[in-house]
Image (cartoon, rainbow, N blue to C red; front, top):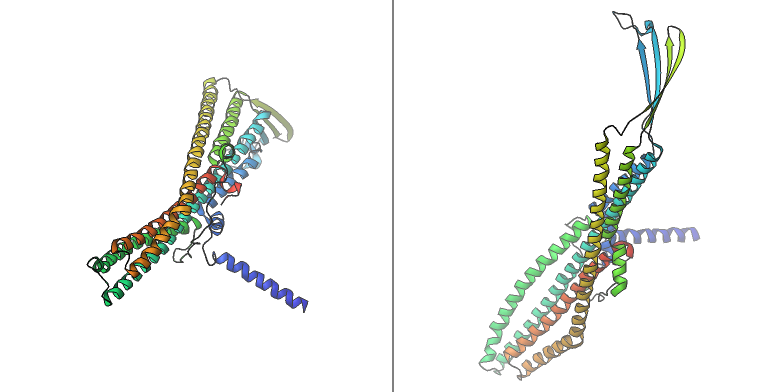
Length: 421
C-alpha cells in the first residue's frame, strides 16, 4: 500500500513538473520568461559555447610543441629505391623547448582570454534578460491598456443606453440629442486605439518569443493586470558601487585589460631564445653510432620585429585601459540618470494613485449618475469617461515605465548574477 502511494505521489510530481515546463500557467510571469531566456536563447547558448571553447584552449596551452620523429636513408644505390641497400640509416628524435617562462605566460594569457570570453557570455545573457524584462513590460502595457479601453467602451455603451432611456421618456434637451453621435464617435476612436494596442501586444509577444526561442504560433497568456509596483534595486552610493563593480560591460573591459596585460608580457618573451634538442640513432653499414644536437634561435638578429611587437602590445594595453575608464565613467552617469528617472516616475505614480485616480473614479461615478438623473450634461458625462480612461492609461504607462527602468538599473548593477528580476 505504501509502495502504491509512493508511485502515485511521484507520478503527480512528474505531471506537475511537466506542466510547469510547458507553459507559464494561468498568467504570464516575469520569472518564467527569464528562466526560458536563460535556458533557450540561442545567442546566450552560442556565447556560452564560445566561453567553454576558450576554456578548453587554455588547458591545451600548457603543452610544448609536438616532438618530431624522422627516418633517413643515405647512399641508396641507383637506379632503384631499395632501402635495404642504403649505406647509412638514421632514426631522429627532436623536441623544441621554449624558454621556461614562455609556456607559463602563454597559459596565463589563454586563461585570461577564457575569463574575458566568460564575461562576454555573461554580458550577452544580461543583455538578453534586459530585453526580456522590457518586452514583458511592453506586453503588460499593451494588455492592461486593452483591458482599460475595453472597459471604457462598455461605459460608453451604458451612457448610450441611458440616453435612449431618457429619449424614450422625453427627458432630453437639445444637447442631450448629441449623446448618441458623440458616444459613437468616441467609440470609433477607442476602436482605433484598440487596433494599435493589439499590434503593440503582438509585437511584444514576438519579441518575447524570439528571446525565449519559442514557437510564435502559441499565444502567450496575459500577465497580471495588477502587478506589484516595481522598486529600485538599490539607491545612491550602493547602486553606484555595485554598478562599477558588477556591470557586465565593466567586467568585460577589466577582463580585456587583464588579457592584454598578459599578452604584452608574452610579447616581451620574444626576446628570449628557445632551445631545440635532437638525438639520432645511426647505422653506418653495420656500425651503430649516435648523434646529439642542440640548437638555440637568435631573436636579437631581427630585433625590430620583437621591438615592434612589444610596442604594439603596450599600445593595445593602454587603449584597453582607457576603454575601461570610459566604461566606468559611462556607468556612473547612467546609474545617476536612471535613478533620477526612476524616482521621478515613482513620485508621479504615487501622486496619480493617491489623488488623480480616486478623483477620476469619483467623477466618473458622479457623471454617470448625474446624467441618468438629468443633472449632468452630455459633454460633462463624456469628459468624465475620458478623464477616467486617461488616468488609468497613465497609471499603466507609469507602471510599465518603472518596470523598464528597474530592468535597466538591475542590468547596470550586475543583471542575472545579482538575482534581480
